[in-house]
Length: 447
Image (spheres, rainbow, N blue to C red):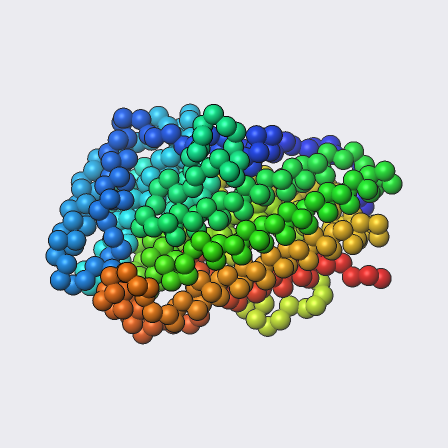
């Protein structure tokens, strides 16, 4: 395929709710407002949950007061009226807030139930399910807590008079357990998205070059790829620095369980009341695999996670056994307009990898960006090993409800059927290594 010399058909990122001029990228241009009075029962239920509920696994058998508190809250949820959300459809910010509040309530409902009170699937009541399915359809995303809910939509300004920036954003407006480790975990992921906004600007600048094949454009493409490499390296540093702010044991035992979706972590599957077949819904929960900027850089550099292209070295047997549809499935958890942006980016008639393959002058710059991304994924493998795979064999941290935590640890070890999984229910080690290897295979070989 030849490289076209025109950017005819270019569509601005802003048409997809991707805001590069305001430096917010995949973030909304303002924090989410509270829902109007007609939906106050949801906001009130969320406030009560954050104040009073704890993980069901953390409740000792003899803590009758906490069990009663949780059951009273869940009974109130079951008796709430079913509220239609049509009135929110003209305000995207209110739709986002409704999705966030309702999905938080779903996870609070499911994960606050003590395991010994469960004898089968967990039924999520119609009072949550019906409006959640409505707003999810409008937004074009999964009806469960997503990366958007806990990161992209979960911030506020430190100083509303100042513009959006990493220094002027406070993450973790809404939390499950309420710990600083939870807030810092969301913040670390949030800082990656903020730093990634400049990558989106680079992709846009590339698309606006009238003729990428002209000699005068080669220098600009090289400069864009060099900037991209630097940003990817800085994102690697952000990911690695989370080790200084998020305790691995606290993450594994107190943060991660709240984020698990239906059937994850040896917990029962969920049934959405009124839905004929809940299994058709995407209910895995949030994952870093839902990060918009990481999908965008993969798309721009043409990283082949599905192993469709014939590249070297050939995929290992472990690569082939990994979930090759994972990244594509994670897109269904994004807002629909963001998926459309990624599709538009993929449809660029002048893909940078093909240009680099045909242009020795920029091949090294392209390979440098790919190798930086490969090293980022190396760092992600190390972080996942520390925070999930190693912690699956750890003891509960000091200060937690030790007796209940120890019981949960023993249950999980006894019930575990295979390798450690991520919050999205994936075989984590195999999946991350496959993604890293797919990235490495994008490197262009010298003739």
